[in-house]
Amino acid sequence: MEILVCVKRVPDTSENEITVNRDGTDIEREDLVYSVNEWDNYAVEEAIRLRDTGGGSVTVVSLGPEETEEVIRREMAMGADKGIHLMDPVFEGSDGRGVAAALKAEVEKGNYDLVLTGAQADDGAGQVGGMLAAMLQWPFAALVNHIEMSGDGILKIGREIAGGNQEFSEIRLPCVLSIQTGINEPRYVGIRGIRKVASLEIPVHGTAELGIPPEAVGEVGAKVKRIDYFVPQLGDGAEILEGSQEEIIDKLIELLKSKGGIK
Amino acid sequence: MAQIFAYILHKDGVLDDTALELRAAGATLDPEAAVTAVVTGSAGDLEKVCKEAARSFDTVWKVENDALAYPNAEVIRPLMKRLLPKNSLVLLPHEHFGMDLAPGLSVALEAAYLPDSVAFEGMEGDVLKAVREEYSGMVRTHVRCNLSTGAVITLRPGAFAPDERKDKTGEIMDKTPEVFQEGLPEVPRRYLEMVEAEAGDVDITKSEVLVSVGRGIEEQDNLEMIQELAKAMGADVSCSRPIVDAKWMEKSRQVGTSGKTVKPKVYLALGISGSFQHLGGIKGSPFMVAVNKNPKAPIFQVADVGVVADILDFVPNLTEKIAESAK
Ligand SMILES: Cc1cc2nc3c(=O)[nH]c(=O)nc-3n(C[C@H](O)[C@H](O)[C@H](O)COP(=O)(O)OP(=O)(O)OC[C@H]3O[C@@H](n4cnc5c(N)ncnc54)[C@H](O)[C@@H]3O)c2cc1C
Image 1 (cartoon, chains in turn green, cyan):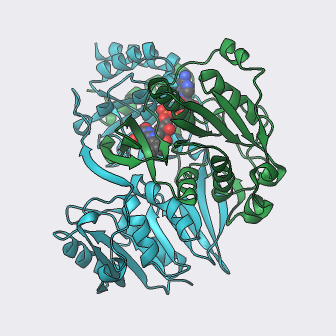
Image 2: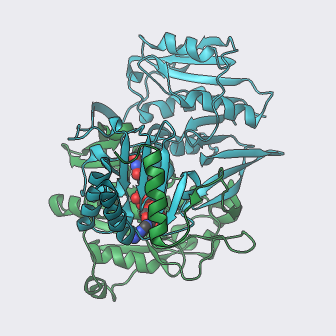
């Protein structure tokens, strides 16, 4: 199978405190640690496993600024065969639809049987995979946590639904699947692995190479636009225990006892 | 404003909790609007569901077919495309079904897609101002969504207070003949079966006190200190999703929308950021304590008591003190 995996470079929320800049136009980006979106990393691992058992190739594509190349290279170090970088100043301000439109053009340049995305990325929207499938008029399934070949041109997939239950279906290829975390255990990538792929060429495609009109992407093409960022104030918030650690622990034990938390 | 539709989820003849949240959200979009509930399914329970929906919505559009017995987004999407008038506004819950159906539906309808809204803040002409969350709930954003060519909007479950007045007597309209005029659409994804999650050794849905651990524990070996704390407290151990994804604990210990729904008296969250999918599994307003090294972690907004500390350092000391005080 020829597999394309769509990945995104995102600030690592478990490593960073995300704060809003002074005028609320963006998050504070200085000193942020970036990595590949967690869901996407599972998608790349799954693609590599499918290739290793069934043959074919894995291509990783990412849309974003210059630095995006880091994550493409990281996923190539994991075992992807090729990388493609979608970059064009007019992509700036794209909504999900714009990103999907660019990816659609890239998919159509290739000969893919399967496209994987993460179930969601840093904006929590979970939209690009489903939109891409609809644009290609390919079948789609969201939150996939199991994939196996099931006869010619058909995959058996599991989707994660409420309560950790799993919904099984058969889906026809070519299709787009959005991958849920936990589907596999992504392999570790060391510095060594990244060095190995350091000199591999990663083609850069903009709207010209993709053959899409600039109005289809970016701020102009967007129906959904972000106005500002802010930090929510929900309810009263927790009473933060202060003092030395010993004082905090004493207070906490007292509270837990009074609420029946210590038997 | 264009016509507003709410796609109603239901199971075993009962409306999903989100149905009445969609009603409330529809009224926020346009207080004058008559919101139409779209209910699809197979014979059996469908009539009952429609009658129930008619008590909360102005109109109910029913679509019945054996192929709709199980809600398969790949079947429902083309039917919705046939059914809905141009420029419709469609509301759905942002959960596993909505996430499957909605993005592609927006493309099929050539409409805007506004995913996972947590609040609406009014219209400016054709443009809706809404609130979303990004970065695991650490920040929120205001977004403008242009509704003039229609929109598909998914709502965070629980974010809109349900409108529980059963004050409507909506007309139930059978849209089946209209939708199936062209026959059943070709279905590229065939539903096979639903497999229930395995039961674990401990049923955390029955626990009164839970010590719950998240990604902040960093390494599998560190889980031991959590177990020791739980033992000292007489509590059960539960966890957030990344702990299960890493295969460090059983799926049956996971709290959240894709795990278990727990209703303890006391919930101690250790190194858990407080994503809505995690919090969605905690019911019954327990006394919640959060320990997190990040003072800005969203969990502190919902917890009763917070401790800003490194759990790797804090937990063993807490355990020791509890053990001492028990003597
Ligand atoms: C469809 C869907 C369903 C989902 N279902 C669920 C679900 O059922 N349950 C669930 O939990 N998640 C679920 N998730 C995942 C959810 O979005 C979050 O990714 C997850 O809850 C994060 O878990 P966490 O809080 O443990 O990790 P993180 O968000 O990474 O947070 C770790 C926290 O630990 C803190 N920390 C780090 N080190 C330390 C330390 N040494 N001491 C103290 N604090 C520390 C950090 O400050 C941070 O706040 C779902 C996601 C999707 C898309």
